[in-house]
Figure 1 (cartoon, rainbow, N blue to C red):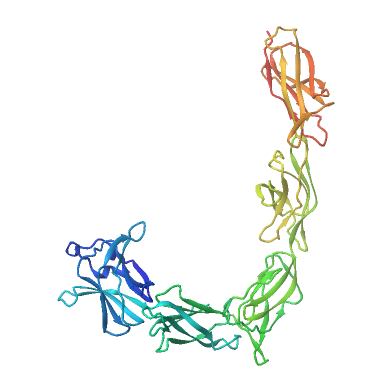
Figure 2: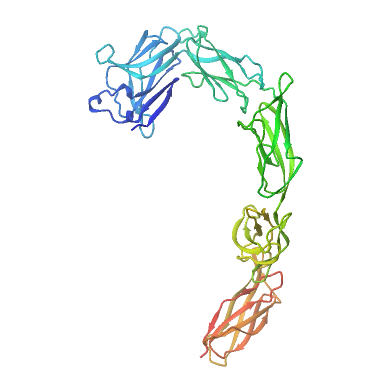
Length: 540
């Protein structure tokens, strides 16, 4: 396998091949290769003793004759050897690596030391790990007096020097002293990193430079090998004034829907010395608002926009380094569609119909050109819309359109149109409200009767108020019959009036086999019609 794993250990970046994490060959089973070791660190306890910790691949075995050599930083001089290495516990759930640690040890003086793992030291088969570590032999290290040479920043003053000092307690005397030879990283907000080493007084200094397009200006110093030891400062930015001047188009532009309109202009800044200088950044044209600046090698012009309708367009500039500025202009779009004289209605059978005309404003289309109109439904008061179907009409010609869905579900309805050549439009919303009705407890009795017997058609008519069904009195219910003969058709035999409790009944003479049904068809404009069940009566 060629996949590489990169791990940063105390400022040292190591590349380890994936095969490193496989089981060791039989010849190395007792000890494994030290190439399997890929991470080494050390920590100092409150008692002044330090322990070295390291990680290895899952196939590595601890073996014998292992020790950690402690060297003076940057030299070959060995000041201590630490043994007593134990461990081997899994470092994660998949056991992709194991963790080990040494016995505790102390040194004579506070300093920064290099660490390396060695096996069979001094023998012909001596082996040294490629992974190195750093020991900050001190207590409670901190970065003191971190500062910038610039008390504040501006676009013309973005470069300076950051400096500070690393101090710590001596593990033996508990005296606070400079930490000499310590690794320090200084980072800017934009990601620039300087790697430094403290001098004999524990001090460090690094130049820095901001690009001038960062969303904030901050510097951070951190102690290598001690992730929690950090110091941050954010010099304030003196924002420079800017002036955005749009030279084209003018205050108002009229253009056809879909047209791409270029926008030209200049953006300048007031430099620290009071002179006007061009500001080379990219700008965006937006509808009804400003946007943040983005860098682009396009000089100090601005991009264009596509006409999508009447709008107020704004060229806007904002940045952490400059005062915002903007310029606006109005856009009038031609060849936009619109619904004219649109009326929507629903009949008692829940059929929705729209009448009106689809026109093109400030533009023309070929005579007889067809247009696709879409039907939308919203069940959440217009928050979201669902397309339910479409139909075809002709521009500038009165239409009557039938909605492909009925109004059985309560909600909002609308029409929508738009093409690549004619701008989009959405109609006003419609809410078709009629009270639902229902015929229940409907029956024709008795059943299985002799010819000439009197039978009764009866039932209950109710209408809904909110979530409650109430009797619907004083309404006419039509009673239909279809004979059980080939080609038999429905025929109204009579009507019945609903009483105060919503019930109705009507007597008939049984003449022949057939099916009966009660229907509420004379609904007012405030109610929907309804039908009862089909009831077959056998006449003997």
